[in-house]
Image 1 (cartoon, each protein chain N blue to C red):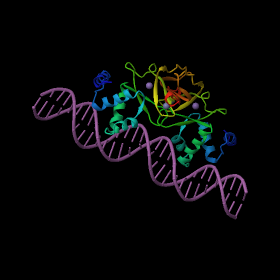
Image 2: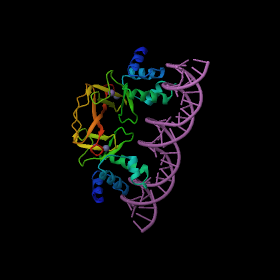
Image 3: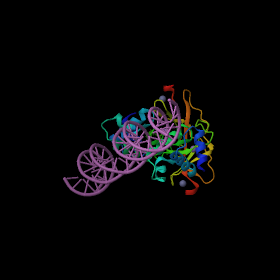
Image 4: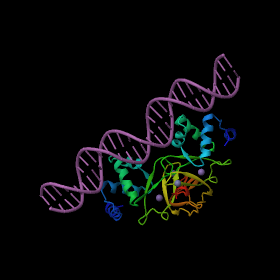
Length: 137
Length: 137
DNA sequence: TTAACTTTGCAATAGTGTTGCACTAACTTA
DNA sequence: TAAGTTAGTGCAACACTATTGCAAAGTTAA
Ligand SMILES: [Mn+2]
Ligand SMILES: [Mn+2]
Ligand SMILES: [Zn+2]
Ligand SMILES: [Zn+2]
C-alpha cells in the first residue's frame, strides 16, 4: 500500500497522517492480520511504545482500526474497512489460532444476530473462535 | 449453598475440597456472575492472591469453572453447570455491562453454530456482548 | 519570528498474571 | 504411632501489558 494512499485514508478519517502513524497503519494493513502493541513494537525497534500506543488509540477513536480481544493476553488491532463505523453491523467473527497465535478477521462472517432477554441492550460484541488455522493444520 | 454440597461437588470433579477452594467456589457460585482474581481477592482480604489464582486454575482444568474474557482487562471466572466439559456444546454467550462492569453467563443463549472456511478447525469460542444490563438501564 | 498547538520520546507507574521456594497440613504406610 | 511422602498455602519476586506526566521537538498560523 502506497504511503500517499494511506495518508489520504487517514485524512479522510480526520487524523493527521504523521510519519509514525503512516508507518503503524501500513504495518497493520500489510500484515493482513491483527497485531498487538508488542507485535508492532518489535517490527520497528526504533519507535517508542507509547507513540505506537497513542497512534492505535487515535485510530480506534476514529474507526480506522478495531480492537480484538482474543484471550492471548494482549489486545490486538486490525484495520477497518473504509466505510466501517465499528457499530454492530460492521462487526465480524475473529479467528484465533491456538498453535501460531495469529488472529485473523473473518470479514465474511458477520456476527450473528442475538436476541437478548428483556431489559438488555447492546451496541458491541466480540466473537472469537479458537482453533487451528490452515497454515498450522 | 451449603459447604458440604460444595465439597461433594468438588470431589465429584476429582478436586480435593480444601477450605480455601470451598471458599472460592462458594463465593463464585453465590455471586451469580463472573468474577476476576482481583474481585475475589478483595472479597476476602485474608487469602493470598496466588492461592486464589491456583484454585481457579485447578477449577478450570477440571471443568468446575470456565474463564470469560470480556475485554475488561482481567479474565473472569464463572461456575460451570454440573455436566459441563467446557467443549463447544457447553459454550454460551456472555454479557458484559459497560456501565457496571458486571459479566453474566447467558446460559439460555448457546453459541451459534459457525461454518468456517475450508481448512479451519475449532474447539472453543468466546462470544461477548457489550451493552447495558437491566440494572443499569 | 513568535506564539499556540500537536506529536513524540522517555521515564515512571499501575495492574494482571505467574512462579520459585519454604513451610505446613494431610495422607500413607511400615 | 512415627516417619516418609505428597499436596496446599503464603510470601516475595518477576514478567508483561497498558497507561500517564512531562519535557523536547515539530508543525501551523498569525
Ligand atoms: Mn476484524
Ligand atoms: Mn458462562
Ligand atoms: Zn495457526
Ligand atoms: Zn450493569
